[in-house]
Length: 519
Ligand SMILES: NC(=O)C1=CN([C@@H]2O[C@H](COP(=O)(O)OP(=O)(O)OC[C@H]3O[C@@H](n4cnc5c(N)ncnc54)[C@H](OP(=O)(O)O)[C@@H]3O)[C@@H](O)[C@H]2O)[C@@H](O)CC1
Ligand SMILES: [K+]
Image (cartoon, rainbow, N blue to C red):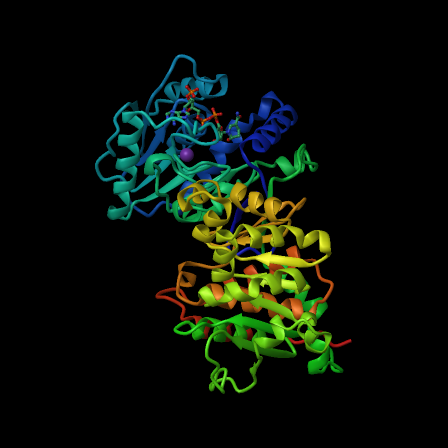
């Protein structure tokens, strides 16, 4: 069955190359010789091509590589040719060692009279192209040979001509497990048809950009074999994580501010007060009962004149050691938003005492820079203190002692490494935010768009997370992190062009609340 994805009402399992291959092996065993899987893959590709191709008489250019991805393209070419469409196949890097299915697909295409050459240039008047050069078999340690690289270039040039490129299984050059691209060489598709299973790399790092509109055809595999042979490598978060929470957790009639929990935002050093205000506004809009702000540096009387609901909190309560001043420990602490250097003076107290802590921005940078703070962060889980870290790639790199490029090259592994190193939950922000936790299956957020790449967007996420957590004392922080990411992204989707200003984002997120079900 063919499914168009994103936005998606339900969450989906994601399978990397090794898992996809074991699904493929099981599906091949179930499919039997009369209905080979490649034939189904080629049929799915041909059908989608017919649906997407613009009207006209120009040829469909099908660019095939040496493996089974190329085989899928050859089957599609034969079926489209038989359907009466003008097709032109370019077969590149062909080898006598082609897999049996691909060799059979080539023989059948030749026998059917499909025009096949080895040109890297698009035929004149092309109206749509299929990228069947490389799929799951991409070797990430090898740069595509010059012939393939030239074909990537020709396919990408079609973007300017508005002839769309449909990538089969994956855009060639995109790594299925990580969403990264070696040496900047990859195909930019307008549509990608995932075959059998969705892969993690389609939804993070460069995946979302290169895939364009994502489609999935399970090649009837779920009907043949309902149980997949391996557990999923990650989960793609759909709207169900938001709707389930809203059904179960909307405040009931008897709610009051004391029952909705408290948040304390610690941050907003001079020049960066806005970051703490945005986090606090977000916590309030998420539904926390009371939100306090501890502005670092000189205190202003009004925390946020536009939001009189927010209350000021004196920083001396945090560093005081007497029990009379310890009620802040009950609050969810959102620390670091616009914290500057000043946050460093409070981190030892926050890390050793805060029961529920969201650590962001300068809070993360200070931990990365100080061995003693790192040690305190690592000890929190053993002391039953819960932590969610919300780094962007550079902050994650500082914590891991690597570089932003290394984090981006394998975002899933980087997020998992952080979660394991510090024994806490992690949101690695960016295109396809990753949510990781110790002994948790990784999740990738599917909501959101480039409108979120704007100043203050991360502060809003951290504050919203704190606001949700305040209401759900004993919620699993991993689930809350997933929920906050999805909510944050979903609110941005109404903004189809231009940046989303962070203060407006808070209001959009607030507008996504749903009334409590009447019982
Ligand atoms: N079997 C079936 O029935 C089904 C298969 N399906 C389809 O099969 C696809 C997987 O096929 P696959 O395993 O043959 O790998 P594929 O992506 O075609 O590439 C391998 C070729 O590329 C070459 N190569 C690798 N890296 C390279 C580089 N950097 N630069 C240049 N060349 C490079 C590599 O060379 P080698 O490393 O062997 O020297 C080899 O020749 C999957 O994505 C899906 O589309 C599904 O439809 C389900 C049914
Ligand atoms: K491809």
